[in-house]
View (cartoon, helix red, strand yellow):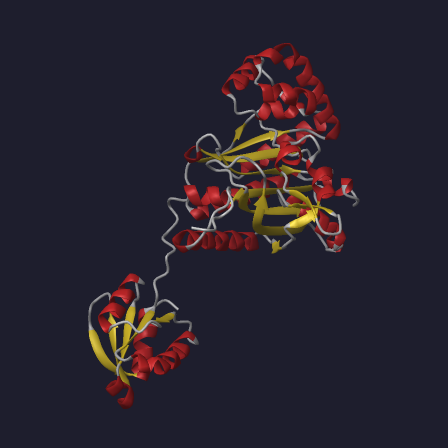
Length: 419
């Protein structure tokens, strides 16, 4: 084999591709129920967009971004996430002039130059939502419930939604000071990555998956809410009251901080034990400063993103999405392929799926192929039947075969398939 796919990427086809499409269709349908409209942004953006929004000291910007210069010397990057791109599009296209909260959903490929492993690829796919224009905790509540409805609709069981609050921008500075005071004497007990994070981005210490680090934090009774202002605590309490009022199940996680600098106040994560160590299937939260930081007027905003690869992996209860073929046309003589094309075109115009053998196989081989394609019906066209204006139709579920006129063929097929 001369050419192989780039490490950290995957070829998606067959039943897996159909599964992705089914999840994507469910997602789009649910977003429509909540009043969201679709947005698509480029996979290439100016690098400064991500440095400014995600944060210089984040792992994504420091280590994982695919960054390059084009022929004109412009500093460009493949998008590692979508929120920054969507806020850029929101401002550039004056979407803020729209009445009410602007609700947008998206799906597409993202790119991060990290070490490939289970649940982590260099090219991966996400879909998510962004709601811009409100600071109210009720919007947080609706966003979290949208995420939960998506999981239920896909048939995912055993997921847990964890919540926390990071407070406002001033609070995050207080949190950093609080963490330095409480963790400072225990730096030797932390892993090398956390020792570096302590100096560069201390909130990321809380996100470490190293059990020894988590034990240190647990023994210190770390609770960042002690550094959060009353207004932000009240916002968090209102969110929980809203979720409780809807009968929604969740749990608080004092260590939940997320890995992007733009998050403020509410953060949440959807975890699933079926994913192992990399157990987050989706996550989101508020980013109330991002619109202003990128040159717009102050706007509250909240959103989330799900990983399509991870969702597909745990969607064991998703109904089979392999759509059977409605009709396979079998030719007794390949010279009749023109007749087959006419018949196929007529049926396809009626939303009936049809395929034909274009390799001149024997009738026996064509029947075997029809069976492999899970065809509901086989339409057999022969020279004599074609001259008489009839053909044979075989019901593959019962084995019954009969000679019918074209009109009767259509009625039988139409009645036997879901169009």
